[in-house]
Length: 242
Image 1 (cartoon, rainbow, N blue to C red):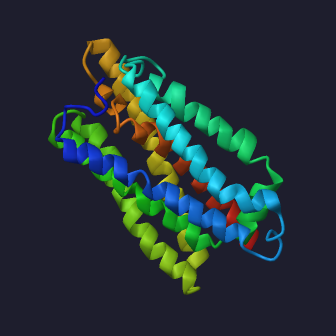
Image 2 (image 1 turned 90 degrees about the vertical axis):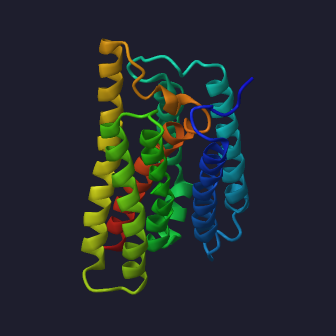
């Protein structure tokens, strides 16, 4: 059984896989920060939450790898199967389970706004869209929309987080504008994926099927749902700080 796609050099696949452990660590750190305060220190459920998050994402990544290895994702359908079997269930989990948890809101109240923004640094994985275009496994239009937007969001996240920490003038407005732009970017990538897939079905071409092979399938499986969720968290956090 082939674990990695043969469409790009092995070192690129390994680098892509390693890069997806960065957001897990960032999310773990933010949750740990939210737990380590006077309100939640004695909450046993809260204490184990950071490690539970690590375990959850580890199992989720394993699930995505197994599903990808079966080849079930590698068919052009609407919605794309990689979203249907991974991103959509993950989104539902975030908003129907996590969002309704009292513990989540306690943690969100006690994390730094800048820490939530810094999680978006992992969107530097957008460079793999550009790499995909270079190796001719992704259409140019889709690669540029996904790659440039994510790289921009990641680099500017560093700057915005610094403004927040320094309590710079109008930092809340700047954060709001940045968050809207970042949110629209991920929505445009999702819409572009649907458009390219529809076009591939109509013309019987490959489309973005290479993105359904491991480890590149982690991008659609993990990033859209998680990025959207974190953007919503930032909107909520800004509202709390008013």
